Image 1 (spheres, one colour):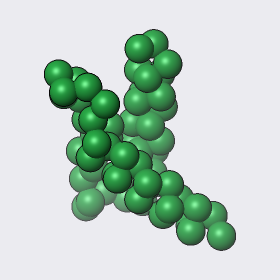
Image 2 (cartoon, one colour):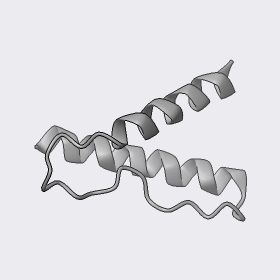
Image 3 (cartoon, one colour):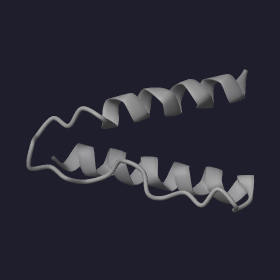
Image 4 (cartoon, helix red, strand yellow):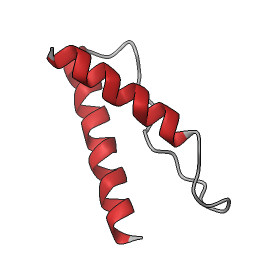
Length: 60
């Protein structure tokens, strides 16, 4: 169940990131993820990227 929630969340985020709200806003939602890295590091990098994106969105 948790994996399904994470998968759906990441899918929705990838769809939303394809539609920028401002044309001059050229920032990526998620940082590059090295797929050769461990699952724990990949999860931590995605979580940190999402936290950064949320904090950037709350200040704009």
